[in-house]
Image (tube, rainbow, N blue to C red; front, side, top):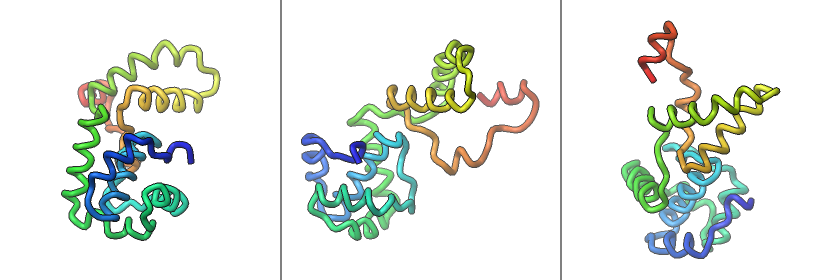
Length: 153
């Protein structure tokens, strides 16, 4: 649960929000951007124990999350606010190129292929580059020849 512990500064920022649901929702967005390092998707429900833990820190019932962001615009506005105030970046083509450049020399020393994924995710988090959402990762890479994939990137 260490990844979901709010700091004093976090509590101050979250405390500026009106309503239990908004405070809890905003806190969850912020914490998810830190760990696992991605934006909480519209309609996504964080695990119950995490909601309960964060709710206790805020003095808010975890059930309040169900009322958060009935307007998706609220969630999107909060995401923009958090990105701006905390320096998070979207995983875009530039971020992809940066991570590829970072990864190439390391990949030559990795013995277990699965180890590389962990190195990349850790580096994305360190750079505060948000991981692509699960729905994006699940959609797969571009199809076609290596030349067409290179043009996509």
